[in-house]
Image 1 (cartoon, rainbow, N blue to C red):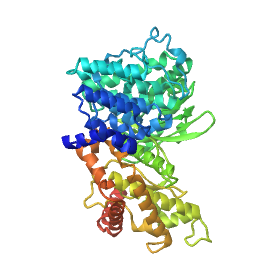
Image 2: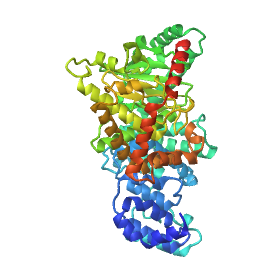
Image 3: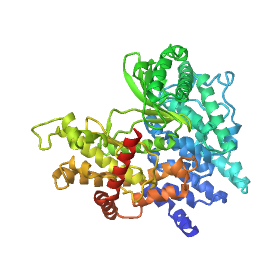
Image 4: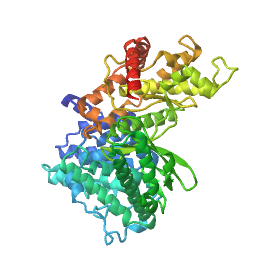
Length: 587
């Protein structure tokens, strides 16, 4: 921000706060001259009066653009209003935001012990409306707003050349840092605690690219989380035991599958080994003596593994497909991958889930399939398995339309498909056309696009994003002739409806572009493959795809032209045929 722009925003700060509280907040804080105590004091006083805004609009204040403790603690204070469900949507980025906190201050906090926990356990409840205790090593005494502001003013006036040091936790009007906030919320909700544990341990893992100081910081916060759970109420102590069991489950599974993969036998022999070792492994027998929450989805409680149905995929890394069984007989199928970094897939699926939530709030259901992914390290992880076939496999039925006619026949309807299934297909196809375009998803061959018997189309394998693609002249949107023919062709009412859904979804997501830009900016330093290529260009790419600086009309026209180009493209069809031949030879 230029000095002139900053001065202008500062001059009209009260008007901006009243009329445009969401968009003006980050610009106002960037306009503050933090080296001038009087201006900082006035900024704090205005922040006290700032209108309430949605938590998603606060996240930008936790990016590296806002290093000052006033910005970050104000953001944390406003995030207190977020529900557990909303918090989990952004939890991965909130963990990454710890990189931009005061690292020395985080490392200075010692984990809770049995002795320091006395007096803090009584207030630890699992109701989101109750504030859980913070780490006892942090001063959480609450003075009134007037007293705190006065103390802040006095500090600023007394030590004008050392503002960052002067504004200690006790002096700021907002007394909680991000690490303490995350631990506090983890003590209120088990799903939050479970995901927070896995995100922290991922960053503390030696296989994750990071600096020693950052890794040490994540390890410190991880130990604080575990100590807080262990020394809290009986409920949280049980959560601690559950998370410990989760880690043991994945460690044992990882070791078992590694031993199978190291065998030099053919795939069929490896499958026999996998089943035999799952059946006879004493560690799993003792582990499942008490049910274990699934790390990928803590609402599912694992009672055992169906060893007889375990198998290995034909791909190079031969990931395992496992059926986890609850004590009630419910089955949850997962893919366990070894040797792959799933963090990029995890990020993309998080974006798809968030886009689905955004659209659903606007009463716009695109029948998306945001299946779950959890990277346990940079070398192994879990993927939720969804029963579906690839679009390449629909050729065995003759076409996509033939497959839908086989799964949901309706002789009385024009295309011979049940209307609900056809509507689901059109909506999901439109949704993924928009989403893969916005995120720049590459390598979209027909093996990476799936279709369920209920008509839900969805994409898998997100090894290339942000415009990167291994194939030359790849279209920005993957829409094939076969996909259009399943709608009755390009001159039908159904195809016109598809167009309307695409444009409506695109314009709806554009209104939340800043949220997605913020979430990507918070993962700049994670080392995730396509983001790490050039972190500064990642957000620039998204700005270009969301058409940030254009009107809705121009943005819609641009997207429509890309959609049209994909239908006309010849090269992708040729590359698809080459890919099919290669896959046939490989199998």
